[in-house]
Length: 437
Image 1 (spheres, rainbow, N blue to C red):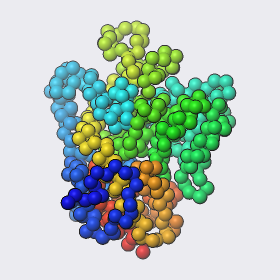
Image 2: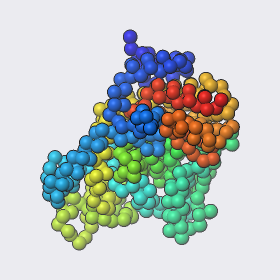
Image 3: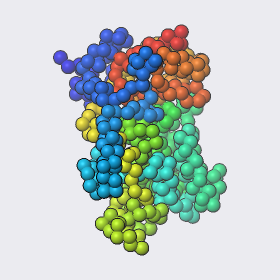
C-alpha cells in the first residue's frame, strides 16, 4: 500500500502525528518516495574516506548534476569542433540557445515564456529593473524593503535612491521584524502600504527571506501595492525552484532570481528576470540598451537605431554566456520531468519532518524561527541557537554535515526535494542532538 503521506498530497499542512522519530520510518519514506531516484543524478561532496557528506545547503549552492556535466562537455566539444560556426550550427546552436529554455523557466516561476529571460547575474538584473521601474516623481519617491533584506538588495536600492539625487534616510522604508520573532507580520506590510503608499514608488521584497526562510504572499503584497499605485517587484533568489510561484497571475511588475541555489546551475551562474507583459509595449520605460536587446530579426544587420526586441528580451544587453546556460538547461530538464507540484509536495513533507524531529528534541538551546505554517515557508528551516555559538555548526561540519551558518547565531538547513531524503534529515537531527548534548 502506498504511504498515506505521499499519496495524493495536495494539502500544505501535514498532521505531525503521522511522523515517527525512528530511523526505520525515515528509511521507509525514502523507499516509497517517487522522486528518490533523482538523488543518483547528483554528485555529492565526500569526506576523506570517500563517503558522501550529508548535504543540506541547497539554499546557498545546489549540487552539480551528472546531466549538467554532460551538456557542458557537449557545448565545449561543439566549440572545439565548430569554432565560430557553433553560433548557428551543431546540436545546440548558441544564438537561439536561451530561447529553448524560456518555456521551462516560465513554468518554474509561473509566467508566460515571453515574460522571462536568462541574462547577466542577479544583482546586475536587479539594477536593470530598478533603472526601469524606480522612477521617483513628486511626492512618490520612497522604496519599501524588508528590514533584514539580503545585503545586495539593500545596496542596490540605496544606490538608485542616491542616483536620483535623493536622501536614503528619507526615502528608504524598512518593514520591521515582529518584536516577538525574527519574521515579518504581513499585516505590518499592509499597514505601511496603507499609511504611506501614496509616497512609495516601489515595493521590493525578497520572495523568501534569506535569513528566516519566510515565504511571503506575493499575490497579496502585489494587490496592496497596486491599490496604492506602487510598482511591485521581488527578488526570488530563495524562491525560484523552491516554492510555487505565479508571477503572471499575481500581477507582479518585475522579478529577478539566481539559478545557483535550488536550480542547481553552478556557482555564479546566469540569472533570470521577469517583466509582466503589461509593461512590454510601454515605450516610456527607460532601459539600458545593448545589442542583445535589439530586434533579433535584424540584430545582425548592425543598424544604427535601436529597435527593441519583443517582450522581456528588450531588457537584454549582452549575448548569452553559453557555458553558463548549459547547466541551466540540465536543471530545467529535471524540473520539467519531476514537476513543480511533486517537488513542492515532497518539500512540504520533508521540511515538516525536519521540524517535527527538531521539536521532538525538546531542547531549549534551539528555536526554529521559520514560520510554522507550511504555506509560509519553503524547504529552508532557520535554527536559532539560543545557547551556544558557531562551534555547534563547526562540530556538525566535522561530523559530515554541510549546512549554512549566518551571523550572529543561525544555522540554515535546507532539505531540497530533488536530491535530499528523509534519512538525510534524520541523521542531521541525530548529529545535532549529540552536539547539543
